Amino acid sequence: MKAWVFHAFGDMRLEEVPDPKAKSGYAVCKIRRVQPSITDVQRALGIGTINSALLKKQLEEHAPVQLLGHEMSAEVVEVGDGVSTLSPGDIVCTSGHIPCGVCDWCKEGKDPWCIDKLHVGINTPGAFAEMISLPEEGLVKVPEVLDDVSVACLQPFSSAVAAVRDSKISVGNSVAVTGQGVMGIYILQAARMCGAGSVFVTDVKEEALSLSEKFAADLVINAREKDAVSEVLKATKGKGVDIVFECAGGNPDQGLSGHETKQQAFEMVRIGGRVVQVAGLVGSVNVDPVFMRTQGINWIFPEGHGRDTISLGADWVAGGRVDLKSLVTHEVSGIDKLPEAMEITHKKEEYKATNPCQVALE
Ligand SMILES: [Zn+2]
Image 1 (spheres, rainbow, N blue to C red):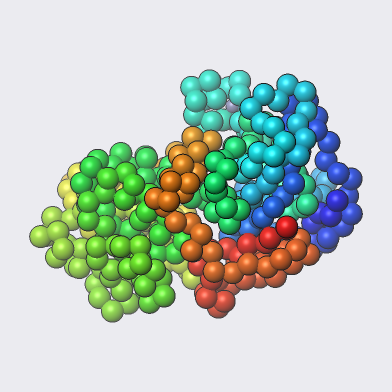
Image 2: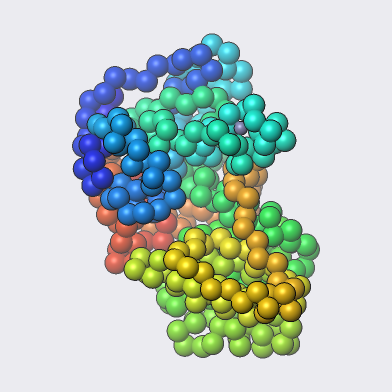
């Protein structure tokens, strides 16, 4: 089969490699569609991000090596001995990690916390290939009615589902979402599914905010034109919202807000409210503990997604209650076009892309 093989950071080559085998407990799947995540693109280029140290080690010890690719739609073509939940023809995606199944966290059902998990595309060959072989517990079967475009989005969407679950949202809670990139829109939809009352959203880009309107946000605030905190306080009669999902922070060099929206989140949440840190944090983080203590702010870091949040998200999409597909603005055809998809994903703003660019293999 053809697969992208990494020789070094910034040096990946499409090569002919042996087809993967259906070992005991494993399923071999044909990739139907894959999208490079933003972190995959950063990892490929050697830009420091989550698990880059692990990737560096893999390159140093094993290059040339097949790496990256975990946001996929794939079809099971062969299963090894002992596989009981998957059969040829099933459509699957992956949560991106393979839990060990035996540590204390795994036994408690908290597989995102597994102390010995394998990362798909880092510790194992990933989905930037025509086929992939993964252990059964690393794959999630999805409803047959789903289209490949949506299935390839389920892994990142499941992070939004996990963040909303961990916010402990109750029916009617007011919500603010800072940032209306793909994750912000995912959170908007997932919060609605979980009973959110009014949802207020902020961004600095008109294109992003017009999407929020399409997804029926109650109040859309252009933070370049108006003070986001004052607008949210005004809309809540000075009280602030029950929950803020901070989805805009991160490295300003990559077009993200740095720590500005985090600070806004602390100021737009009500006394005793919850701020869920969905976006990454970079550099040294300034937080005023006296302010946090006085306001009783709960700053929450989501526990992480797993098979359960993928399956829940898949059911919402299958039932037509959540729309992931219309956020996919760019696609290319053929595994050889992966570099083009990575370029578009890396420069989403320049290409006016919302979701990462998908690669169709069929
Ligand atoms: Zn474990």
